[in-house]
Length: 524
Ligand SMILES: C[S@@+](CC[C@H](N)C(=O)[O-])C[C@H]1O[C@@H](n2cnc3c(N)ncnc32)[C@H](O)[C@@H]1O
Image (cartoon, rainbow, N blue to C red):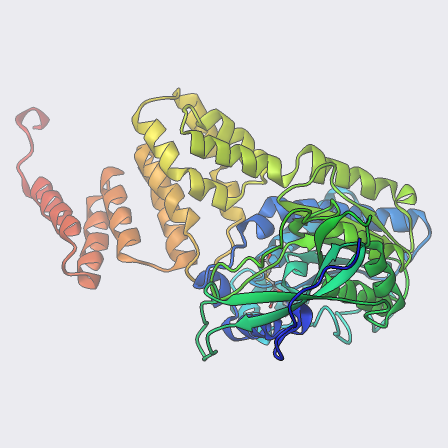
C-alpha cells in the first residue's frame, strides 16, 4: 500500500512537542504554584495519598537493599528524588513512609537523602510555608530543590557527590512533558503537525478546554530526531503495511530518562506513575486527544514505548500485571530485574496484589452502588489504603447516613473510632484542602462522644484555623459534655465573629435559660 496523501500543513503548523501548548503548561505551573491544586483543580488525590507514598517507599527501600546485596554503594548516601513534586503532599508522606519503613527494617546505617523537586520555584516557596514540610526542610531531613526533569544540573546529591544507586520518582509528571504524535499508515510513519488556536494568555489561568488543535500529517524519513536511541524507538513504531494507528511519542519522558541516566552516571531506578498504557499501539482506532479539563492539560503516556527506549540505555522495564488507569512502571538502569529480587517482590505486593486501583475501584463501587452496609468494607479499605484522609472525607456522608439508620452494632463504630487518629496523622494541610479533622469531629458528635469530638474540633482549629463553624460545634459539644460555662464562652465568640449566627444565639439562650431556671423539685 502507498503512503496516504494529506492536505498541506498551514504555515503555523508545528510538531506537537514544539507547539506553544507545552510552554503554556509550564507557565501555568510556574505562575499558579499551589493554587494549581487548591483552586484550578489539578487532580492529585490518587497520586499523593499516603497509601501511594508507602507503596513507593517499599519499592525504593527494597531497591536499596538489593543494591547493598550486590555490593553497590552501601556506605554512601541513598538518594530518593521526587521530580515534579507539585503540592509537596507526596513528599511529606513519603518521608513518613521511608523513615518508618527504614526503622522497621532495621536499616539503621542507611544514609537516607530524600529530595523533593519541581521546576516551579512557586512550589518550592509553598513547601517552605507548609506546616508539615517546613520543619523537615529546616532540619535537612528533606531537601527541596528546583530541578528541571529534562535538563536540571543536579538533584540534591545526585550529580554532585558519590552516592548509592539513586531512585527517581516521576509521580504524575511524564504526562505533562512534551510529546509528539505520529500516524502509522500505509507502512509509513507520518508526523502530525498541530495548528493550535488558543485564547491569548494573561496573568490569570486561561481555560484551555476550548482550544482547537487541527492536525495535518506528512510522511517522514528516519532519522527524524537525530538521536540514535530516539530514532530507533521511533522505527520500532512501524508495523505492517495494512496497519493504521496513532502513536503518542513521549519525547519529554524519554529525554528525562536519558538526562537522569547521565546525571546518575551508573545504576538507578525510576518509578513512574501516570495515566497511560503499557500496550502498544495505545491508539489503534482513533486520533488521541490531549486531556484538557481547564487551564491545564495532560496526555496519556505510552509506557510500552518508554520501555523500548529505556532498553536502548541499558534499561529494563517492569510493568504491572494488567493495565490500570493510573499505570505504575519501574525502570531499572544498569541492573536487570532478575537481580533485583526484593524490588520485584515489593512491586508485586504493592503494585499488583494490593494495588492502588483495587482500593479506589472498590471505594468508587461502594459509593456508586449506594448499597449499605458500607462500614465493614470501609474499615478494610481504610487499612489497605494506609488511612487516607481523603477516603474518610469521601465516606463521611455515607457513614453518617448509616449511623442515623442504626445500621451497625456499637462495637463496629468503636472500631472506627479507634482508627480515627491514624487518618489525622496523615493530614497534609493545603490552602482550600478538605478539613478531615473537622469531618471526624462531626462524626464523633453524631456518635454522641462529645468529649472526644471536642478534642478533634480543637485539633481542626489548630491545623486549619478557627472558623465560626468549628467554634460553634465546640460550644455545642462543651455543653453536651456537661460544661455550660465553656460552651457559653465559645458560643459568644461565634456571635462576635458572625453576629447573624442564629444557631449560636439559640444555644446561648437555651443554655442561659437552663442555667438560670430553678432546679426541678426532685433535685432539691
Ligand atoms: C500534574 S503535576 C503533578 C504534581 C504531583 N507530582 C502530584 O502528583 O500531584 C506536574 C508537576 O510537574 C511539574 N513539572 C512540569 N514540567 C516539569 C519539568 N520539566 N521538570 C520538573 N517538574 C516539572 C509541574 O510544576 C507540576 O508540579
